[in-house]
Length: 327
Image (tube, rainbow, N blue to C red; front, side, top):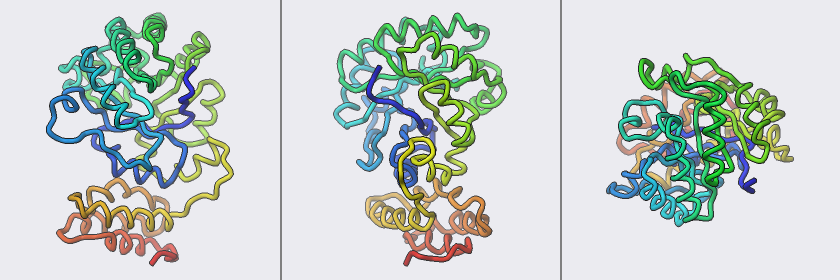
């Protein structure tokens, strides 16, 4: 089994888990593994922008890669390794039409031989782990035998870590948003996969909302991936190092997070991003505090203005009613 393990991770979420979001989440937990948004092979190989840059403080950080051409996937894996990513994850779980038209995402579950070819080629070219994120099935191909065969073929090609979203995906008839909620969760199927493939690292994803739930899952499998709940209630991560990773750390306060992010903002906006591009990921930080709504509203109304700086975040936080220990 790979040395690279992920007891707790934050799911790759398009338009959400960008570099600013990941830097923010890293302030809350030192050990939770962070994922990039999905980046396609075309963007890396032919795009004009730099889609792979990140802050070194984000480690451990995994690149999620979208594609299905073994040659292109391998070239991108080499580039990602040069950037220093801790692992490269292949997207075999996203059900959107755009992803299907590009022949990657959940539709690849129907082509385990192709996924295996990508894994084998990539793993032979780089030293970092190549992992796979999938569903438990697609459309009417949702038997346990179908999932078992997929895991078996792809693992024999060199993949030692699978993250399984415990819902099947409907490739037609449901939107990506509906695919996150409507197909029923089947955690036991993921547990059964772990029993059948005990030499592999198996992580579970889908509908998990608390660290307590995460620890319950960790009695059966190797890792838990949380998505929307972390994004909407990010401060839950401030206890992850203690409660999931059993580290003897003092919980970081919201005030400390604000202070660290203010320093980050003032440096970042020198290079182009507006304050809103950063603080939009922080809207949920004060959930549960008396002035949380005022905090969100102030940021929404002011962080996008020309000339805004970190003082906007400080002013918003002052509305929460929390005693201010930051300047």
